[in-house]
Length: 330
Image 1 (spheres, rainbow, N blue to C red):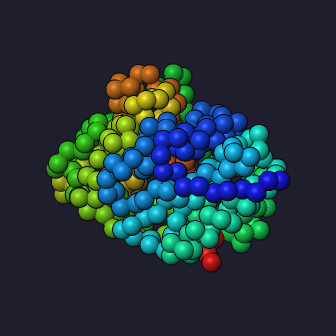
Image 2 (spheres, rainbow, N blue to C red):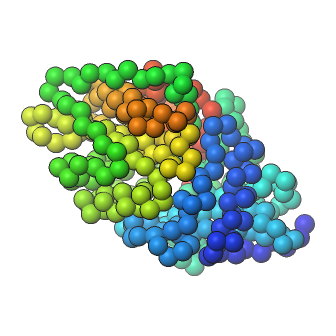
């Protein structure tokens, strides 16, 4: 095995190398889940990325003058300041040569220097067996499984959602792109509740700090990365506040495959079928706004979120593979 040199992605040429590894790995490993378009990551390397309370560092591993590994390090800057997320890929043609271990050793040293002793890896494994090829590597690093999820996908050409009516005392509000001004404070609060109410199992994650300004910054980043947010909220009529919301993210460049982003109904308003109201309305709305979108992908805790899994199954989602967050504390 040749020596592996690690390089920070800091220009278009190296970003293309990073993208080539990612596209090959995703095409080999997944169905209905392509790598994000290169253009979504351009703001990270061309200096145009706004302050969005997280930083993305892209890295490649090069052997024999060819990129064989690729990674993205995500560093939150408003909260969870000792934690980093590390997403890595190995080109299928270069697997089994020890590149992954060498690559991760170098990246972990980099994260130590950046003051991030806690590292989260999110890796896939087959459904339904659940045992994946990366498990021995992660265990050898000292990581342990912290949160197990299942990726499910729905084919919108076969499953057209009929919106469930909102129950008495609630109304539905929808938007594409920028959320209504009258909802932004509530959406920021609900985004914070995602970090406290959503199942985390054994994963260490501090409550996130959200306000209207941070929510607007996240929208700005979405637009800059040529993504589109399609959102639905339910408003509690008596209080006038949004008590649940859901969002689908679509690439403007590759809209055929979409992604379920946040979905939350606060605990105080659960038990009224609001999850199904939110998601059925949002699927219907997405189909109207983007008829070229065929697939929607979603991730849910495998064991501790049966309510949302039930909603997704009613919408036609089917399992693809497990995704497990592994946590390494050093």
